[in-house]
Length: 179
Image (cartoon, rainbow, N blue to C red; front, side):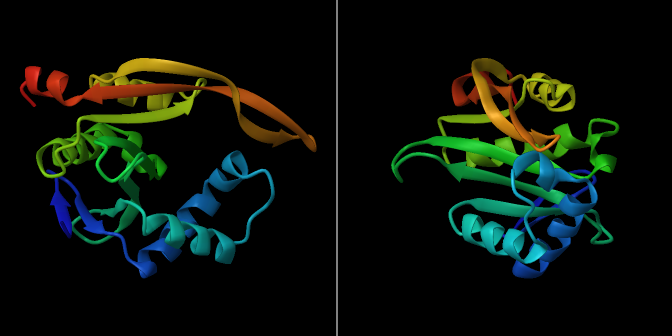
């Protein structure tokens, strides 16, 4: 599907041009330093992101005026026959106001269950990321697992590790909620 729409946003199939804009958002918010131990150039980021994008359903999130706010994807994390998809997303700070992230992600979850016939959708975040944890809870996702000391980050030239939590929603539960 090329487009997914919500009340306030258009999710357009990710293009190479969009990846340049997303890199700028990432760099501006210092996102890369939290997720890559070594400083990564914009060019290397774009190359890696393009490679990963070929393996998933990825959309650029933009408003009706085509301002880019981030991306969202559904990635099959098993065999082609497996119906286990990861919900991956990154938005700029403006999206986290007024439940806009939930609006976008709910529509992507709907698409996963309706169009892709996915059985389960999961996502994860740093255990200290209350913004994302609240998003998962608002989407009626269930905490499924905790992974101890798995997220590396660099502070004062020393590598440290933080815990990660994983949330999931099953199609059967989504159907019961009448989504």
